[in-house]
Amino acid sequence: MATLETPLEAPKAGQHPAWKALKEHYAKIRKLHLRKLFSQDPARGDRLAVEALGIYLDYSKNRITDETLRLLLQLAEESGLRAKIDAMFRGDKINITEDRSVLHVALRAPKGTSIFVDGEDVVPAVHAVLDKMAGFSERVRSGAWKGHTGKRVRNVINVGIGGSDLGPVMAYEALRYYSQRDLTFRFVSNVDGTDFAEAVRDLDPAETLFIISSKTFTTLETMTNAHTARAWSLAGLNGDETSVAKHFVAVSTNAKEVAKFGIDTANMFEFWDWVGGRYSMDSAIGLSTMIAIGPDKFRSLLDGFHQMDLHFRETPFDRNLPVLLGLLTVWYTDYFGSQTVAILPYEQYLKRFPAYLQQLTMESNGKHVTLDGTQVAQDTSPVYWGEPGTNGQHSFYQLIHQGTRLIPCDFIAFGKPLNAIGRHHDILLANVFAQAEALAFGKTPKQVKAEGTPDWLVPHRVFEGNRPSNTILAERLTPETLGKLIALYEHSVFTQGVIWNVDSFDQWGVELGKVLAQRIVPELESKDEPKLAHDTSTNNLIRRYRTLSR
Ligand code: G6Q
Image (cartoon, rainbow, N blue to C red; front, top):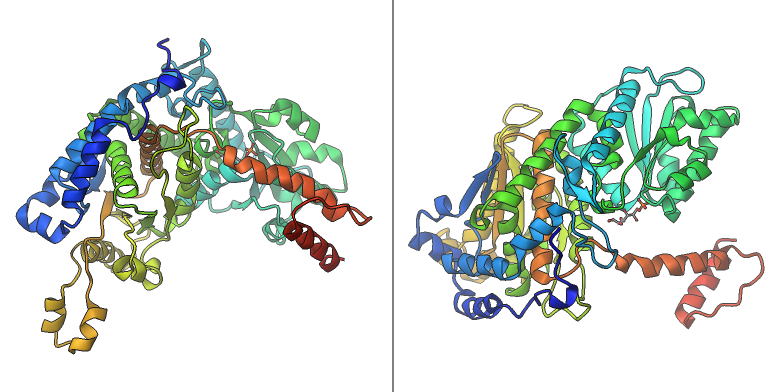
């Protein structure tokens, strides 16, 4: 196995010749308007678009020239992107701060292929778990899996948080059209008791199956909810402990803790420490997804992921969808100083997609030091956010069109609707195209005046335009397309992380708050007034809570 560069030898972001060249280039073109770029080059919309795997990416409405692209691609090369992609696919321990391989790509590797971690081919184990999930899913879907009282399972509740929740919720919502409709799916993540209470209030424990999803099986929120679920289930089933085997299954890497909780490890679906939480929805963490849509459609989802993996690995960078998307994000973040990216799906089923991408992007690349531990020389991950269109148009789009910030947008749309009703889809798609057009080209004072607008009102009605966007268009939202879309963003995140030279696969930033919360819990619960040694603000808040809660 080729060795990965040691951190100290790794290239330093900000020091490549392309960074400097891009800086000079930016100074020259930063005012260039998309109106001019299109009028000087009418074929721009044909040229700056790529189609691969049925996904059409129109990136012509970006504030770039051919020279920008050339330099960004040079930056990718100088950053060693090619070697880093190979290192990931080879199973090298590129998550250096946790000394782990990063192999979500192995979760969708077809049977018969091989990927090695510490000398062991992991692909057979991946397929063994997929087969076990398929058997279990079929039993739940057909009604063969009976609850403790002999009733069939009607409700499936995934209990997990972060990477063990956001993917399952997003995928369930995204693929709901394909789901088995006589099953109810709910997702409990928050340690706020309301989340659990509302999820079960109309359910019968005799018909309810809990999937406790936790890689570590020690996460405070998930374990708190899991114990509450166990108590709720037992209370409805005469307290008979043997019922747990019928109403609880686990998805975890930690068999010991699963057994300690009382779940038979025969009912445990395994995954591995080389799968990061936010990259795990296509592992056993996707069990609720598989129960919802069935094993065959789950396999199509994996196939979509895998096709995008191959595309990322094999396609020259100038036609490589994730590479282009990632480089454009670097361009706006580090040169234009953009702080955010808006994800705007014109597909109601993708309503949780922006929330899912928030974790994928920001937990991965929200880093302030490079692989060698030194301060990064430029901004890293922007803030990702968004809502489905057309709803957002009637709320926050105002700021994108006429505010003072530059917010690059990713529009996502599909040619065919899943629910074809009258003219809805034409109207929906007309809106997405119109928004991208309006953002890019705006409306000049001359145009506004020509409409008879009084002079004093003209400035208010002017749209500067020159607001960049990508439009991602595919035929229809299917499991396979969803897999491609998710992998597109996974690899875009990877590309950005390589350019910034950060560890995109750790998340130390979530640790401190967790540790402090564990310290504060007993201070809130203790009967006697605790001796507090925090700062005065925290001390006061704790005291006030103790008074309010009693
Ligand atoms: C994701 C993070 C984090 C994790 C949750 C849940 O990359 O690591 O969101 O998924 O903290 O962890 P467990 O699955 O171990 O409960």
